[in-house]
Length: 66
Image (cartoon, rainbow, N blue to C red; front, top):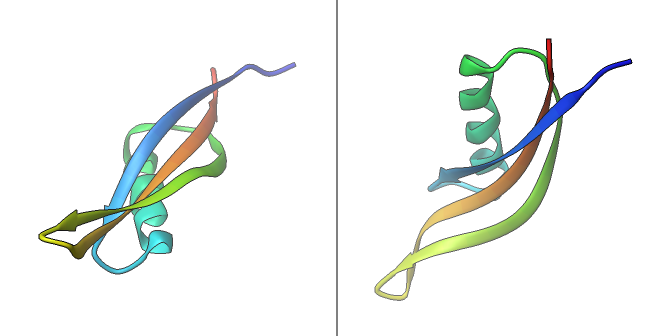
């Protein structure tokens, strides 16, 4: 039997939503062990003066409790 913790992260990228999600997972992988599942919860964009400056991906990430 296993127990998992789920956290939400927000990744950003000037390139794409896919890259924003990738940034969140890569950063989480540096500090968390046992990442299992990542689910994109929400996609949005940051605007400045009516122009797109960043893609944002909110990602739920689960990892196993040891």
